[in-house]
Structures are given as structure tokens and as C-alpha cells.
Length: 408
Image (cartoon, rainbow, N blue to C red; front, side):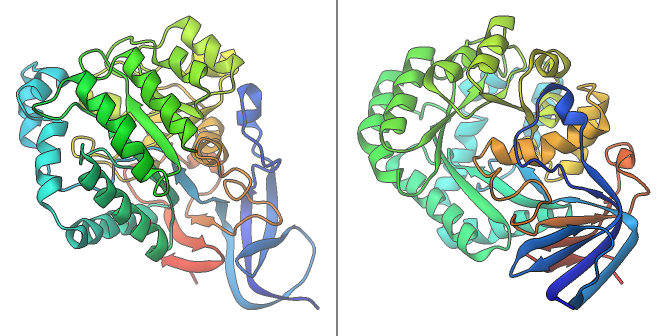
């Protein structure tokens, strides 16, 4: 009898097999194995199916539970210092996000506090954030810089992100986002030149992606395009904060520069949606962000029906204080009108594709990394339907149990 490191049984094993991003009706095809097992060896899935016996170092009986791939959060701002709960009162009184920014609040306030923080303090805080995310079932996370707004501080943040990547059990993907706001005392033109001339060459070895906040009153279309094309020349893959607070042509720009994703998409035009479909740009939707901004929600149904590949993320940041992808999935159902199967696809294989990792993780298939969640639900349809409590009973990362809430 063959020996493996770990053997897990499950009532429903949601495999999402095929290993490729899912669009349209494919999002509802979860490729479920009933009453099956997963055999893990050397941190990877060695076998998955039914009616085969193994001798295992460790065996987990989850035969009355649901197994799914580890959740992937493809959009966070998880390394920062400070909190801005007092700004919530301003928002409730009708003060807009951009008005708060002009008052020296918003991102600029977080920048001041993050600049004062040491790398060790940022790392300690970031680790605590990732520990909590992991407890809720997120096994892979993208983290953006963007609270430094000069070369020295952006490098500092990216170095912290890379230390988290090295030392934390989760897979961590670093993104450079120096174009998050225009720092005090500089014009847009001056700061864009600094990003292009100084920052991008320095951070290109510390990040995998480059993101920009294309928005009226922040970075214009021309500036964003210049930054993204220069980043691309240095090997960074483009991403775009697109059409979050107003229509800005972000979806169209993401298509034009060959971005892997365009994120938010609340005010995107029909043409922008069509251009993303034509150019295979993934849409990352962030419904908790819309909730906290009192904003409209992205037109997820139109996007899916148009053929766009949709992913979901938390947008965890100082004013969107949610670390839990399970809440995102619930809002995906109730606010974006996605099915339970669609939110699972959007939070696993599609989210992995939006950060270039669909070949490594995001589905339960032989040869892929053994990132597995054990959920205390009766079937997959209860995921997102039951919310407000943590459904995770166990988290397996690279074949190791890293969270054990109630495993036998």
C-alpha cells in the first residue's frame, strides 16, 4: 500500500478541476467529488478521488464536511500603520472620499503614520493581519505598497511585504503601488516623473505587479498609462484601480496596457467591460469596499454574462477593515447577485489567475499545492449563505495543518 504524508476524507470535495480561469457558465461548474479523499505528499496533492487506499502519516476524517481550495485574496493594502475610524463620521455626514483626501486625511494621513513606523513594527502588525486572514481560510494574499509615496518609504513597505512572504505560511504576492496618491507639496506631473525615474527601477526586484489609482482628482489617464508602461518595461505586470469612485476609463486603460486585472469597476462603461473581455483582463470586484464607501456595487451579472472572468477580494485597508473572504463571498451573493458556485470560483481559481498563480494553486488537482480548507457545512451551497460566523474548521497549507479549530 502506497504511503503518503496526509490523507483527508470529505463529504464534498470541491475541486474546480481544469486548472484554468472560469467565465460565464464555467463558474458554476465546481467539479465536485462526493465522499472522496485527497492524498498529500511533499506538500502537493498526490491523488484525489474515490475507492483507493493509502497508508498515511496523518489522517483527517472530514467525511461529514466540505473541502475546498484555500481562498485567494487578490487585492489588499495590508501593510500600513494607523486607523481612520474617525473619518467614518465624516462620510456619514456626506463628506466624500476625495474631499477627505483634500483635507489631508485619507491615504495621506496613513502615509504620514506609516512613514513614522519602523520596519519591525510594520512586520509585526502585518503578521497579525495575515494570521487572522489565515484563520478565516485565506491561504494566499496579494499586498500592495502605496503608503510611502517616495522611494525610501515604498522600498521599506515592499521589504516588509517580502519578509512576510519569506516567514509567513501564506503565499504572499507583492505589488508596487507608489501611484496611490499624490504626496503633499508635489504636482501630479512632478510625482509621476519621480515614480518613473526613481521608484520603478528601484522596486522592480521587490514586486511582481504595478498598480495605479486611476481616478478623477488623483492620477489621470495619461499619467497612469505612462507609469504602467514604464513598469512593464521593468518586468512588472500592470494592474489598475479602475472606475472606483467615478467613471475614469480605467477598464479601457487596463485593456490597452495589457493589465492582468482591473479592480473595483463600480462605474465602468459597457465598452470598458467589452474591452476587458476582448483582452482577457480579469475583473477583481471588491464589494466590502462598496459597502464601506456607501457606493454602488459593480455590475457583476452583466460582467459575467459578457464573458468577463471575475475574481473577488477584500480590499483590506485602513477604511475597509475586513480580513475575512467569507464576508466577501456573502456580499458577492447578496449584493452582486452571484450564485454560491460563482463566488467560490471567484475566490479560488479566478482569484489565483488574477495574480498569475492558477498553475500552482486555486483548485484541488494532482500536482498542485495542497492548500485545502475543511469547512463545517453540509454542502457547498451553505458557503456564503451561512455568514457571520467562521465556517473554517481546519486549514491545510502546503500539506501542513496550520489552523485547527475543531479537527479530529
